[in-house]
Image 1 (tube, helix red, strand yellow):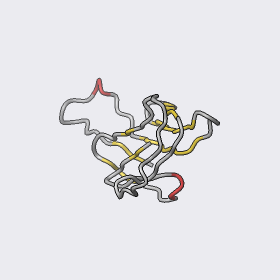
Image 2 (tube, one colour; image 1 turned 135 degrees about the vertical axis):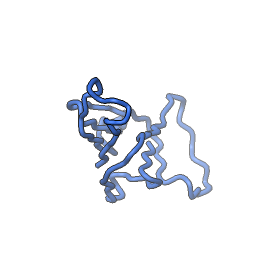
Image 3 (tube, helix red, strand yellow; image 1 turned 45 degrees about the horizontal axis):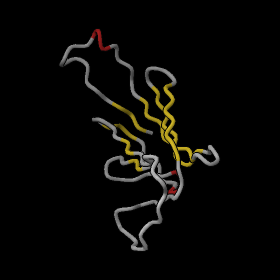
Image 4 (tube, one colour; image 1 turned 30 degrees about the horizontal axis):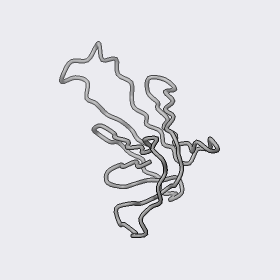
Length: 108
């Protein structure tokens, strides 16, 4: 799984946590298309932060209108190996106009 926030790749193992207001769309790229696993190249690439030779899946949990939890779990044991929460102030879009309801997401 690759999670990018403002150009940084936060993983639970790194112990660097990113908090703050992000104005824009948050994208999550999670690999694991279901093909058979192959060995990684012995070349150590600078663009690959973490390599995992295992199957896994992403679980999204929406607690309410304002809080979303993303968890990456390995298929073999079901344990959470990475997670983060996205929270935002809820605004009823039916009462917003184009200029009166700015979008804002808080990532933590």
